[in-house]
Amino acid sequence: MNNQKVAVVTGSSSGIGLETALHLAKNGFKTYATMRNLGKSDAIKSRSENLPIEILQLDVTDDESVKKAINTIIEKEGRIDVLVNNAGYGIIGAVEDLSSEEVKNQFDTNVFGVFRTIREVLPTMRKQESGRIITISSIAGFMGMPVFSAYASSKFAVEGLTESLRHEVSQFGIHACVVEPGAINTGIMETMPVAKKSMENSAYADLSQALGKAMTEMVKNHSSPPSVVAEAVYEAATSENPETRYTAGEDAKMIKQARTTKSDKEFEEFILTSFMSAK
Image (cartoon, rainbow, N blue to C red; front, top):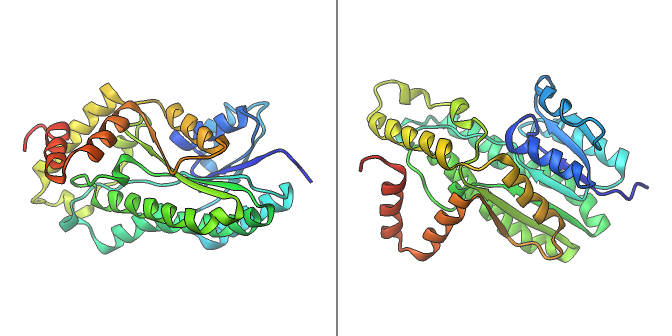
């Protein structure tokens, strides 16, 4: 039986997942960097030489893919110590502009994908009476953002999931927590899908353009590197008594403080002045 601690990271082809997988491997974890499309594995291959990393196909939207990947790891390693639920994306669009299919797809990855991976690792973690389940949330997990309603609601969902999970699994020596990044310089703004109706004379076009401009400027001038999130994940994975939430990035800490100290009305005003060039 292998006694080296084993970590599984979903969505490891780029950005936060890539940096997290590398950081865990550099710090002694046998790390399984999983991703939906193995054709996008070149980035991690080029940086993982001599590191204890294995690349594995895992599509969080597919029950059988998740089951197959987790079973493969358990059969080979006999254990899973850390699960990092990182796979996810955000779609841009006001509530009125989002189709049911677009919202379902958002939740299938960001929420149901988290349920799928957790369900598969829990029997092993319960048997070994230890484990860490770390889910990448967002500042959008504790604050609503205009034209990010589907994304924000999916992140609110994983925050609630994690709080509930903590109560359920603590009796087995398992800890669950979330990491809440702020603006992270991963190029995500350039690749975010947009609701189809948003591109068809949307009533929210001006709002979307203003927010997009503000977000682009924030990422350009105030974002943190993905390594900040990777370090927060490592802290959650190794702390003797991990916190429920880890905020990653100075902007995220500032926004979190404002959310917890201001009234709802004051915070809405704060968001308008911070993220929008005009009300």
